[in-house]
Image 1 (cartoon, helix red, strand yellow):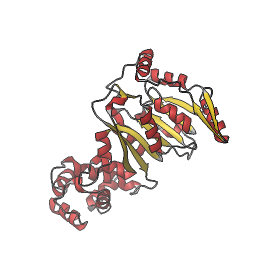
Image 2: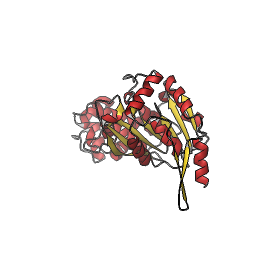
Image 3: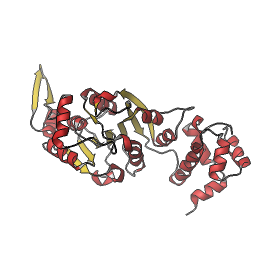
Image 4: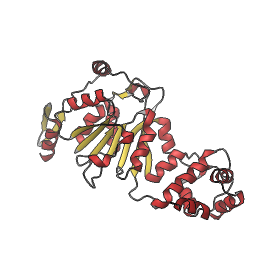
Length: 317
């Protein structure tokens, strides 16, 4: 009954109780539309026309929401941050399941709609802000672990993920919907590694949970989507002083990805080619390999055993 009371406090009115023998379950009557036409009508009521510039594609299929929340592993002790909640279909399920939900919404009309829709939910609040400029630490109790669950705007998904992972207060995990191509770049493996994949793996262990067709969005995008789950590393694999050098080396390697690694690293890092070849071979990396064939551990080794001039540059004030 404690869980029932907690859910009742969250959802306020609109609850129905279903008793089977001695098991009591609580479900909420949705205050949001349940059909595609209903969602279209809501958009018209709010005066919202989906913006391509903001990457707005509003999810309306509840089955996808259920799968995303399941992939995120959210339970009633979790604090969840939702980026770009839009019309609130995912928000509604998060409010039902999580201890607290912080929704970050840039569009003031949508922020007002969310405040009104979930006004009776004690565990919900809206932060009207740009997710790319937000320090979440100011909205969370000290040392409070949190998760991120979101249908991210296509136009800024990778930038938002990077911003969240580079914060002093990183989430415990992220379950986010992005373009399928972006998800595949995030979860790539050698010999098809990407710079986004390396950067993401530095902070997390990623996996693609499932793919999503275009026709569950308003308007439908021209591409498929995918939900990617990122389990954030508790301890990052390099000390803070070497992290800028790591990303400098990785960026240099991928800048001319069709060229052999010895050539591109020498050119981009302004190193003599013989020294570059020796650096690679001393670390058991063939100089004629391409950047996309290297795994995270190999980039880490190259950073930890970088030439003295690169280390000196990284440590310079």
